[in-house]
Image (cartoon, rainbow, N blue to C red; front, side):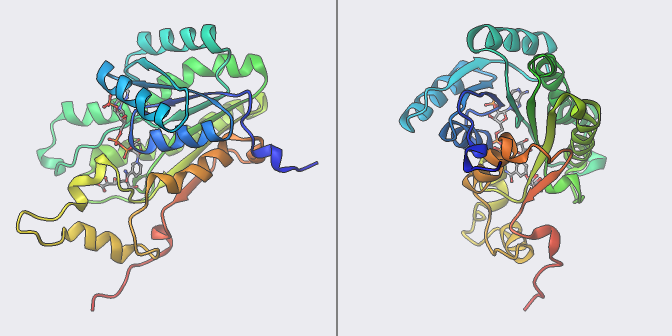
Length: 267
Ligand code: NAP
Ligand code: GCO
């Protein structure tokens, strides 16, 4: 029988990767507000300590660990430590990610590999470490933070689009392979969100004029604005909760309508 309690995360343990700031921080706050215990990782102590203070300022007693999602040993150690300290991880949000905006012919293979390693191999490594506990417990939720670039390409983001397109298919494959274990794996595809990652696309030019990319996105977004990390909080709680137990392998685009819109006619 449906009740609003199905949106509650009380008693759940959630690991949100790369949640020291940005989208991951907002999603972790939402999961905490729904009742989950929040575990997050970053790559350095400074980011961990600042994030712990920021979570505390929002009334959240989060737990931070140093871990690079591309290092399988570090990830295995993190998951074992979390399971010892807090119990099985019920919810995994694969949020950690980077972008390098370089024209393809100028992009080094090393840079291409680094983006794919963090944005695609990282979610594989972390999911592989967390899944055994979920299978044993008889349920689990994995949410992969995809992108508009899981569906669309654009100049200078070849590595990122390849990785996020792959992450969409990894999402569907985890659904296929573990749905019978009562594990739901879905994606959230944010549109253009105002975070440190997109600052170069939004900030005014040196002469004080508006950033052309900023204007471009506003013309492509029916909502007529950039998204904020807060726009992703409700969708994340939904996909992390029992309310979405029959939603699996789905990418939920939270994009203000970009994917549905050809764009405003230039005036
Ligand atoms: P952000 O502000 O740059 O934050 C990225 C986070 O990922 C940081 O906490 C960073 O931690 C962490 N991280 C990077 N590499 C890592 C690694 N190897 N191991 C562990 N943590 C790592 O980016 P954001 O805008 O919040 O984006 C978060 C996610 O949403 C990314 O996957 C991004 O691709 C995706 N996304 C963003 C947008 C957008 O418009 N902003 C739209 C769609 C999708 P450190 O402090 O250690 O670097
Ligand atoms: C870019 C942006 C995008 C956003 C996001 C859109 O350079 O085009 O960084 O990639 O980060 O992924 O969904």
